[in-house]
Amino acid sequence: MIIFSGTAHRDLAQRIADNIEQPLGSVDISRFPDGEIMVKIIDNIRGQDIYIVQPICSPPNEALMELLIMIDAARRASAARITAVIPFYGYARQDRKDQPRVPITAKLVANLLVAAGTNRLLTMDLHAQQIQGFFDIPVDHLYAAPVIVKYLQSQGLDNLMAVSPDAGGLKMAYAYSTMLNTGLAFVAKQRRSPSEVTAMDVVGDVKGKNCVLVDDLSTTAGTLAEASRILMERGAASVRAAVTHTLITEVGMKRLNDSPIVELITTDSVPKGDWSGCPITVLSVAELLGEAIKRIHGNQSVTSLFKIS
Image (cartoon, rainbow, N blue to C red; front, top):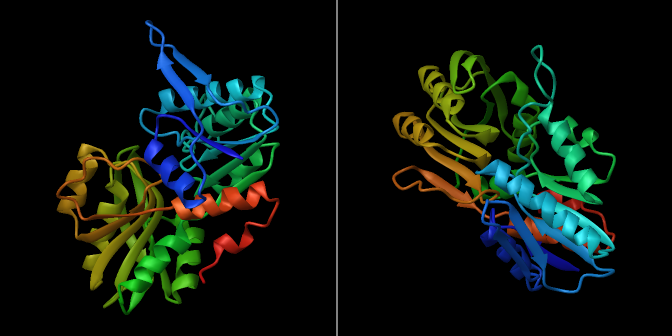
């Protein structure tokens, strides 16, 4: 087994390697004078089980192209199996044709990964679970919920309530409510644009509850901010947010600071931004991903990783 890292999130790859007591493989990633990506794998990987860690995060085009080139280099170097470890699967927002003349980028990226030579995919909290079906190769889909739930339990909060910021996230919120043994609610919303939403109402009794808004992804924090305000209007005692992938922009940071959210709990699936002044707690998923890599390499089940001990 050899673990390689792209340049998108080398810190996470190093933590994964340290967790399973394996050194990171040696790879030279540079640029040609015109900006094209050049990759050379230094180690001999003939017949080896290869894991390439690279979230498709900002800048997503660079991260994706670099990943594809690394996969191609490994395939041409006669690796026995290539597993793409993508903690954050970018381009997943467009997973269906909801308007005329739009692409399905989640499927396009799946095709590119397979065409490059990927034999297996390890990812976490896809924007839509049906994206697993876009692949004709094995997909191991992990969840950050066990990591986040353990943290919430350690805070000693009572009267918790899992809340989905929209109807589409109900399944995820239900999973949190089951693990936390709490009630469930959701916020009905209407989206004006990709960065603006209008919260309309709350389904569920949140009065006096310490609400936890759960979502897979946040960039502009529009959904979280509007949902938190309406929850406080309905009598919630406090509002926290638990988001797996946080790519908060400058606009999102302002909205987060102006909202009633007392804490945003997230993971290190993507690199940490300049979040100074924002109430953001970052939990590591390196142990979770590292254990999954060990089990995949040893042909063992990863099902127990979905549970809380």
